[in-house]
Length: 528
Image (cartoon, rainbow, N blue to C red):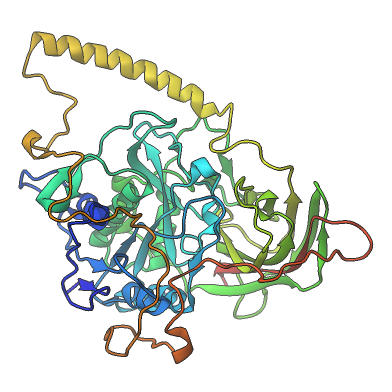
């Protein structure tokens, strides 16, 4: 019922086991919903949930095929786990094509019998390349739930991407600095178990499992209710991190962790008595089509007032998502940063510098999204800052991070505990505390070789954009059919800028680039 193979157009989504890269979905499924009480691997977070598989990434695909996958059986499927996206190379801007974007919107607004499908998305693993998950058009969608990761001690992983669209984080066994990571056990190909699953791909399924428990506790909540529950139940993690701020609505947030760590017991209890939020409103708060210079090694600061569509049906007085749509040309896109400050004084970095992004293409109608102003009233004076920064000299996590101190303290405690365990083992040969509970030792296999003929190993997520011929019979479930011109559109739209960019400064003053146009859209509710 919940499975389909869109690569081969048949109902069996079983992966090709001869390619070891095809383990990804199986590992995600095990974390989220592996059955309990069967002595196989571990236990999924929502072990009573039913699981399905959609095969889409193991072959050529188009925008239409992706849309079909994201809208597949959306009246039957509650939660879609997505651990894929554009390259985490620190220089790519990638977003869904028009059909996939429409599928996400329709799934959230019409799926689950009108309550809205939940699209849980991994934020990405590009921390070491200074990547920013706001350069990923899937995680910046207001219709997705973007999940980052932390290690078992609550610190950020060394590959964590920071951005303003991350709503929360979950554990994944990662370490704060490069080094040995704690093992997470899940299902794998060949009916085996594995301890080799890492990255934000290992975090998103945990979040999906928690949200399945939320829906089990209250099946009548909407996709927006779920996001409200996450925002209001998430807990501060790594409190020593100096990135924690409190917005004008009294909510804590952090560029690394969103609103914090998901706690299953807390959010489930909150869901049991949750009342549905009022309908979503959309307000274009401000727009400007006047070209403005971005100064060389300095900032363009724009102050603007908005009444947030007051006295109209679009009025918003309590924010959820804020989307900043930007078109610009710049001599080096990776040197740009964009910040937004709300009337309440809350800052949010919409785009951070990226060392490897030397593109001169700029951006053409790119949507940046932030949730840092959640609950605030948008009416008043805002500040938009576009900065041409000195070329970044460092890659990856910040130096002198307060988390380094926390990590050293944790390492000391861990070494002390290991010494205690070793002493206990010498006294009792059956002592085995550090082996994962619920996992049979003889079933954990690591570094397996593929069975059968070997194939050239390629990165599974994401595959290179490809082309297939689309027919109306390809997917009987998609509600919106592509027009002829769209059937060959590649799956991930990676060209976000201009084809022949040229920086033409306004007036005689020099500039590093030009802000061509921009607009800000408020999504939220009104008390009136």
